Length: 229
Image (cartoon, rainbow, N blue to C red):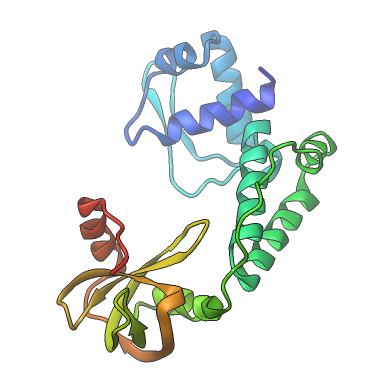
């Protein structure tokens, strides 16, 4: 294991503990000696990591410390490349462009060795269906989700019936063959799933919905089901 990777692993271990953890435990997890651990902690402190503690008392990492991109492991670089390629291939035009731009920004600050890993990654995304023309409103839906604003849509259900819905959008699922909006439906007074290619029109309002997105997400995760309406 390289020293850079070891320092990254040490930071990750400290982040996993909210309370002080002994040097012996950290050294055991990393498979290194206590002397090496103390040197690594001193190195991270010199780089700006707010690690509090001392030998015999335990160590804790204060929140807010960010590692530079050069500390990415090779597997993390490959995960970023694969994820970006999937979004570029499966997302809408705006999201795909954002994924490519993000990867370019990461590449610009990587050291040569890791940039080579990024440029030559052999993890590929298989061919999939093109984005349906009806999904041009995906950028609007993402903005409404971020702002926690109500939307009004026209919707064509699986039986061919049309309806007007007031929704509280809080999640958007990307699948190979379709995209799914997850929202609280004022008509049904419950969480519902809407295929975006069946949305006939959309109006994003300036009205914030009364519950937080995180709360709705938690309730939805408890159900663990995704079914088109």
